[in-house]
Length: 79
Image (tube, rainbow, N blue to C red):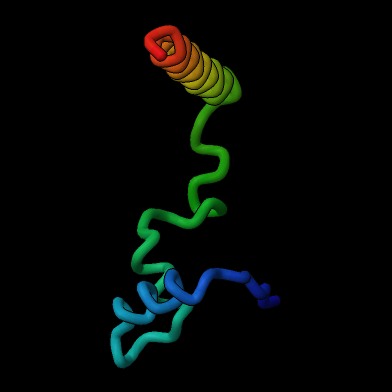
């Protein structure tokens, strides 16, 4: 089954610039993205490990959000 994806003309041109003569656009995208396909790595983590990773990512995201708010507040106070 194939899917269509809308991308900007500029992104299409960037991808096309990386396309090799013997590649399809799909081949080029797969090469540029790199890494294994999701179905190749599904299930390699225990539920406990995956949950711990989710929690760590969420904590980092919240921390980054707090830092952005702090910076924004400081910049607004200086105005």
